[in-house]
Structures are given as structure tokens and as C-alpha cells.
Length: 424
Image (tube, rainbow, N blue to C red):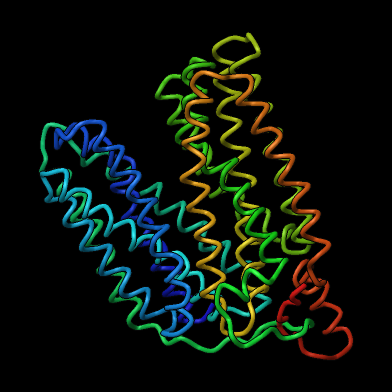
């Protein structure tokens, strides 16, 4: 890795570490510690999603016009102010405004950092760069949550103020680190015709491969990430009788699987067709939902139900480790020259929509409609495989199977170039 990419990865780890301090305890802080009630706490969590949905459509154009670094620095300062204000807020109005600032800043960080990784990596190193990003994010969230859990005390508001102050400090430290990054210009692999120079949403929506990828992305995030802390946890408690400690073990198993498996699966993944890797993830997640069904509907012992439920989260983690070096580089390879920020923001917007809709649909189903819940999301997982294989028919070889495309170019004595996607 070059110096710029190393600093970007440090930045990813710092931001995830800061978020890990507060995200698991946000509901308790608002509802109980500040005494604002469950309704206000629910609104705060909704504000995060709404703020992201508002700012992301504009973030892409800002990244294209100004570059990812200035946009990232602005987002970091906004998030730092939001975090610090949240730790000091005592009324519902100030809590909601602070959450909006923090949520907007967090949302813009994602496509800005992803675009910086695209610009600081080559076709040969991009999969590994995004795998490293995902690894450090999960490690940072896990370590931050672990340390934060030992610092908080629900009987003392000051302990939560300290948590939010640490989160703000992490964002400001990241401002300092990112200010030292010197962004290079990174060319793209190319074997498809160039697109219109106008850019923007009209051009993006005219790229059918990208539209199919966004639909696939929505299903991916809806059927997995959108269920972790809502429908699946509610199902585990209500249908499988999982204790809160066992639920914590399941979440830890998910993170542990990602940390352990990320680089073990990387070589396997980067030599396979991306569409087939995503299709395989759909099958792995289908097995995960079958395990969840066994835990809650299998009339087995509590120990077996707990083991099956923990296995569900571990299998989801394996799928996530396979997706991180696959989906984000594919978004980058579908983007025309200079449009990576727009495409990353569009994909982040789809992710936020899925994360907003997923809990709203899965939460009530997981709590009361146990068998329909499992069948529904088992079918969604199989749908991932179908959508991935259909997407593969629209991708060029350089986009779907870049390792083989580069190998052939090198074998002919040429130099690998990055592709500009065909607009079908």
C-alpha cells in the first residue's frame, strides 16, 4: 500500500472505533439516561436514516466536483459537532438536531472514503484495499464497543458525555490524519466504450448494469444487515428463547468470523467471477436462514437452538467477508472516469434505504410471524443468487472476472488497463 492508502485505512479504523463507542448505547442514553422516553429514542434512530437519505443524493455530485477529500473533511467536522452536541444535549429538540448532524456526517463519510480508496488503488490492489477497509471497520467497531461498554454507567450522565466526546475526538483526529493525504490520480481498466461526459443521475440510471447492481445491493442489505439488530434478534428471543447474553455471543461470532475469514477467503474470491461470488453468498445466507429456522422452529434443546442461532450470525459473517472485496470494487469498475463519487454515493443511498426498510419489515415479522419470517428471508437469499447471475450476463469480462482479464493482457505482453463500463 502507498502512504495515502495507509492513512485512509487508519482513518477507517479511527472512525469505526469512534462509532463503536456510542452506537450500541444510543437508545439507552436517550430513553433512560436522559429520561426522554422510548418514543424519542426511536425518533433519534430514525433521524440517522432520514439524514443519510437527504444528504447522500447531493454528496455524489459534491465528490465529483470538489473531490472526495474536501467532502470527507466537511463530513468529519459535521459528525464531530453532532457527536459532541449529542453528549451535552438534555432536551428532545437538541438531541434530534445533534443526531441529524451526526447521521449526515456519518453517511457522507462512506462514499467519500470509498472514492479515496478507488483513487489510491489500482485494479490489481482494489479488492484487497476494500477487504482491508471492511476488516478494520469491524475490528474498530468491536474494540470501540467493548471499551465503551466498560466506560458507561447508566446512573451517571457524565460517562455517556465522555463517550460522545471520545467519538468527536476520533473524528477530529481523523481530520488531522486525512489532511496529510495527497491524492493521486488513478486510471481505470478499460475494455468498454466510454459513456457520455455529462454525468449525473440520468447517466447513472441509464447504466443498466449499475441499476441491476443497486437492486441487488438493496436485497443484500435488506436481507442481512437490515435484520441483524431488529427482526433476527427479535426472532431469536421470541421463537428460539435466546438469552440476551447468547444474542451478544451471536453478534460477537459475526464479527469474529469476519476478522478471521476476511483474508482467508480473499485469494479465493478475487480469482472468481464476481457475480458467482455474490451468488454463492446468497446460498450461504440461505443456509444461515435454515439454521435460524431450526433454532426457533425445530423443537430442539435450548443448547442446540443457541448453537444454531450463533451459527446463523457466523454464516452471515462469512458472506460479508466474501462481499467486501467484491461489491465495492465492482461499483468502482462500473463508474465512468471521474464518476466514482457519484456511483459510490448512489450505492450508499441504496444501502441506507435497505437499512431503513429492513427493520420496519423484519422487526414485527421476527417477533410474531416466526415461520413466515424465516421463509420470506430464505427466499430473499435465494433471490440474491438469481439476481447476481443475471447481473453477470450484463458485465464485461474485466468487470466480472478482472483477474483473468489482467492475466490475459499480461500473457500477451501488454499492460492491464481499467475498464470504462458499457452502457446498455
